[in-house]
Length: 458
Image 1 (cartoon, rainbow, N blue to C red):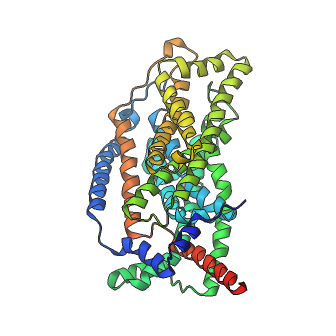
Image 2 (spheres, rainbow, N blue to C red):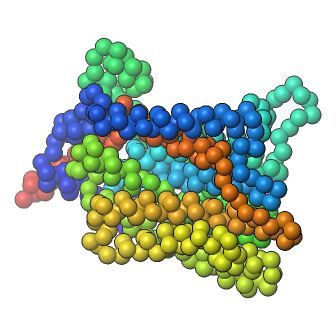
Image 3 (tube, rainbow, N blue to C red):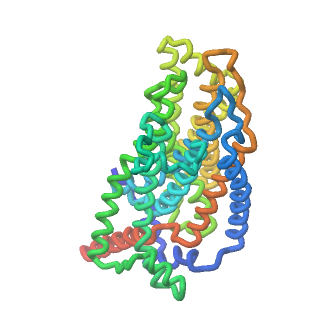
């Protein structure tokens, strides 16, 4: 069933014209940066600079900068990797799957979600390079002809699976995002002068807006959506196989692929909600990002959060039903062991907090929506931490049991990705249209034509 587009109803009743849409969205690209934008960008740059120092240390001095030990060989590094990949899921879902299902309400949020996907995947990819030990030899993970003769990549390595999954996902997502930008870049080109006209003209690639160009644009969009849709399922499924194909209690389970995909959509939509609420207020786009958009996003967060909750319960049941004492202990240890506080945070943030959206008043509250979205992303980080660290810190030998404590290297590399993400997103929001003008106009135009037909019949 197709949801009636909230943007259509809002713009038509508000008397918006196609020119108004162009003005409302383009003015943020064409105007000078605001004081608030400069302040936030400065903070993001400072975080990036501080994180870059620790990234440099990790890159050249090795993984000894992290708090890993002989028992906990994976910790914050893989936690952050899986967390960023999960955040990158919502962009492809909103752009591809909702496009194939003709859900018009996606038009106000798909552009920012696609950009978020690209930046989040780049952040996730940085942890793959860190894990290589010698990241300057990263090209060895690619199946390219080489002069070493016998050297070939090891397809049994989860690291190689991640390289293929992330690179494929990034390539298709980047292409999908850029193709969607072309009509809007042409609009800004036609309004710009001087150097800006040259730059946006080159990026618009000669877009004319003719009937043939639009027909090909729509065909390419559908093809890319068809290619992207399997990626939503495959990428995080492959990431989950990093764990599921091992024999470690707590990881060796077939529920991980669907469980990870649902969790990725859950955290991704929460991050989109955060970013779009900020953009809505800062750029005064209340006419385009409506309360109905926020409500629909919250409904998806509630559904996916409930799916994740069912997965948590299923894990405990299967561990007990298996009769394997090591498997049972792994899950008991999660809830009652020395890291119990992370398990409580995970359950509270991911399972309990989204249930507040069953109430319409809460679902349509800006403040509540923002806070719960932040809480969900905190909870999803703890979920990955619980899965990874609590399954490792107590293994088969009690003499090997240990506790994980992060070092500044762990924290610094995490801050590096945060700084990089927000610097990229702020630059995107300033120099490119944060909302898809072409699709908004198409929705508005189709509504106007429909009203004209009704008036003619009357």
